[in-house]
Length: 345
Ligand code: KG4
Ligand code: ZN
Image 1 (tube, rainbow, N blue to C red):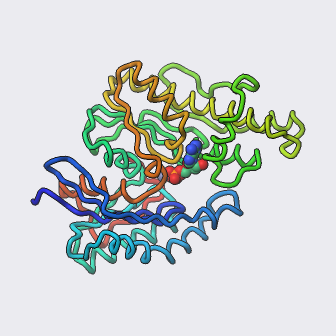
Image 2: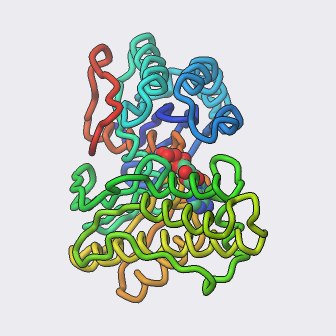
Image 3: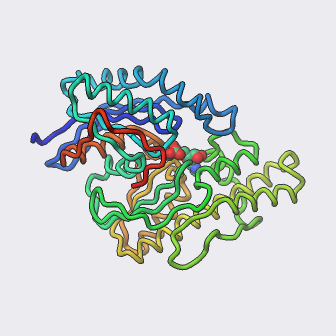
């Protein structure tokens, strides 16, 4: 097999239609992003305060071919230069996944290229490798997004052990719901964090959820309810001052970040982890990034984070994960690979 491979990645699991072309130099262990396109459906879902599955599927079906076409044009590549097509098969919204997978299967069949099915969470993990190709194992991944919050241990590439996950809401979902309560638009994570940066950390306080030793599960639904009760006790959302909103946002963000950092650091220490990575939209949160960095440095554990734009859903991580599988000839059947909305690693 040649030393380099070029992979077309396709991602459509939720509300982003994305494609990317990534080159992987196996000898140097280095990735180069040749092109990427993301069509975000945020504006379509904002009026509903969350992702509307039927609208998501329709928008994917409109955009998937233009997005793939633009990505190939931007990479200045013809189909002949693509070695394989990697595509998200799950987890995610069934109607959204079907669009990306059907496009990938059709192109793989027409172009006679290998097809590689990728778990969406692998995409978040492998987004880290773009700027940090050399990783020391064992590795621990904190995936925190609108749909997931979990801790995964990896002894080596492609070996995953779930250490803990959220028992109710995902961390990003909690950001979105609390943001909505404070009058912010969907998805509220970045705006809530900006508001929190103006807040006073000493005014309000929320209890840390599942604050037990060696328990790596998360919970954010009780915290969300605590915010709701606090807002009610202050006379309701409409009567909150900007200062109160900022102080509430600060207390909420501090609690989420503390919970994520505490469990990640404890899981890393107890499992002799050498490298911690983060992924998912909440991985773009600055207090989370800097607090994790500080704590892990204290314990001498490497911390790797993707650039901000690769925290949220993208096809670069899908293509990068596909490149690793390509080098191990881990291909899927072009006719039988199917979507799995509840796929686990
Ligand atoms: O990974 P992602 O794009 O989609 C899913 O797979 O869910 O994550 C989107 C989530 C949203 O809930 C959004 O509010 C949250 O990530 N998010 C943030 C930040 N940026 C995005 N949450 C907190 N702070 C941020 N800076
Ligand atoms: Zn995601």
